[in-house]
Image (cartoon, rainbow, N blue to C red; front, side, top):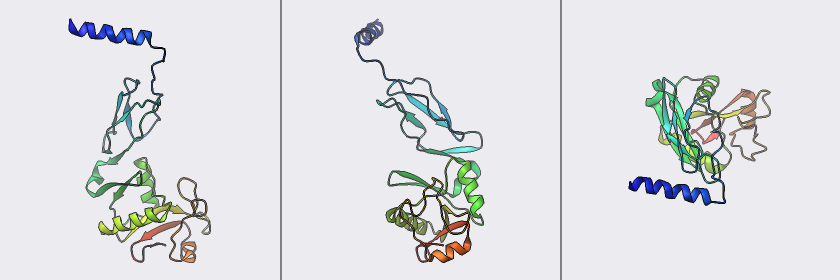
Length: 195
């Protein structure tokens, strides 16, 4: 009986409210994550999960915010066979997934990142570059692929479409060396620079 009285009071409050109830819009589609949305009212929680053969790294839910938008997705689906060599860290509001694979070329590393709905890292400033160099050094990684590549050997572009000119940051040990290499860029802890 007490429960029924509580429900009736809630209905009366909603009925006399002049403001419409806020509901979240549809979540963005994500081929790498399953998003189970039930209720879309403020405070509702949508559960995240991964397809078969993948493990979820990060937060397993998003929340409907007062703005009518869902909170940011901070999760990745990572193939189960790779889970032992993965390190996830946050810096400057971004989440970084460090995967230790050997003998992977740029195309293989790029494809792996795409498979987990990510991309090779875009480095936008010295602080981020320093963080990545220090973190990879602490993980005993000598060099790592970054998302910077060139199709013509002279202009370099990140996955977002930014260039080293538009985001105003680059850290080549020698720009001519990168141009000679042509299509992809490797960051190296040996000299803390890009090649």
